[in-house]
Length: 569
Length: 43
Image 1 (cartoon, each protein chain N blue to C red):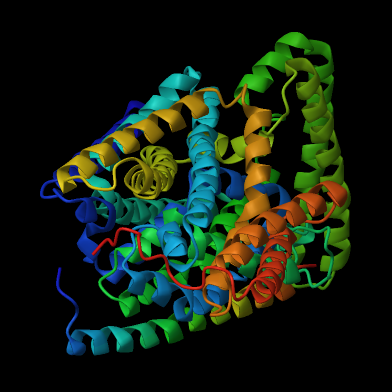
Image 2 (tube, helix red, strand yellow):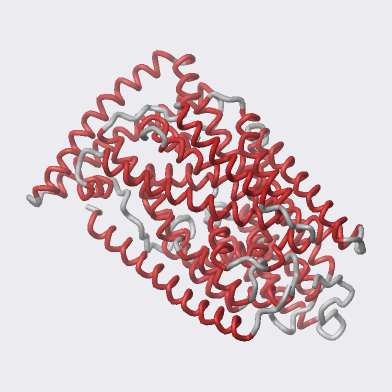
């Protein structure tokens, strides 16, 4: 990468880290460290929540997905506005009004200590591992693209983030997120503009070419439990997933607990949904336009430069033969794309036949690439995730000077803001739900503040270690992520039970376990069912089992909030 | 920390309702635009 691009990246990282540290001044109490003394403006909280959700995986993986699969992934987010509306009138007033530090603390007040500890433990386990994978995703890509050792790439993003999160707490995290979000939006808009300028046909013709390849199909109204991205899985499964994520996951809940009042908390939650669908559509559109760009300019056969090098060395003859066929297929596809552009611009009504010819040419290109990917997997012994390298390769090879640095800084910003919020929430749950609850209930604020900083550093180190071991831990991480999907909906079910006056602690605890077991049974018994439906299964099981058991054990069980829990006011 | 006064609480309630209308409008407009784009460009 050009030194000017590196300068942009380094200046940005330094600015975010130094400003984060500067904002740490005055954070001397645990409430200031974890909840910014519940005094942050709603718009900053909203932007921060939005930045937290935009991880580097979104910037690299989602754009790549747009290039190979088109716009339909955006259906995943259709449930988000509905979820925000439901949360705004249900869980947000409950949690904000309870003046708790963590969502799980509320569960002890409503049910009992074991329900709180189990949900907090499940959160720590899944979020600790996911924090590592969030850091690993861009680090692995940068390692392959720049040829750096993986630990360097992890340290480059991990150390500044851990430093400002550890020293500055949620205040530093939120204000850093606001800046990171601005950078991400600027980077996205700049790339769309560059793509529109560099593609040698009119924007209308470019979108017709994408449409001919099926990349502009956003809505799929088929009702299929096995198809992950349909309108119905997005609206129903997506709503439950978003309700679980924003309503019960401490990394999100903690953000709106920092707002000044219930209405400000609701507003911040709404703001985080404000641009979600348009922004995700814009991110996918980048991928779609990159696909069109590469119909006019020859793309590499393999986007992962490390794999390309390895395959070329291991199987030179086979790779050369594939490259030759690929070149010929690309030439024919380019001619077909030019024909679509010509008929689109001249409007002579032969679009359908031009599109049909393009689809045939495109399928040849796709099949040659599929052969190359299989060859890469055979030669390297690793699963090819070539889709994640499409955008980094495009950015480094095609974007003008300075803008490539801006995009790389944007990807790092996305990774850092996602990790920072998670580190802070992991530290909060560790200190509030375990250390203060079970180890040392009474101590000075300064003591808890120091333990919190230690906990942030611990989780930061844990995330960096998981990230550096990403390649060897691949299967383990997948197991943990899969395990995470078992209880996401189930935890939401417990929070719904908490709002039903007649539900009891026994019903909630057993319901939670039954919910996770039901999702596990669906996952292993019917693996073809798309994961978005797992959340629906979890919620329904917990609520049904919890309500029935509560009704049966009614008179004898714990019915009210626990009185021995330390209050946080 | 001080609790919000009734006036500020009222202002934030009004802001919430205004944000609700805006957010839902943006989502509906986004869905309509995506639908029109699909219809126009899918061949």
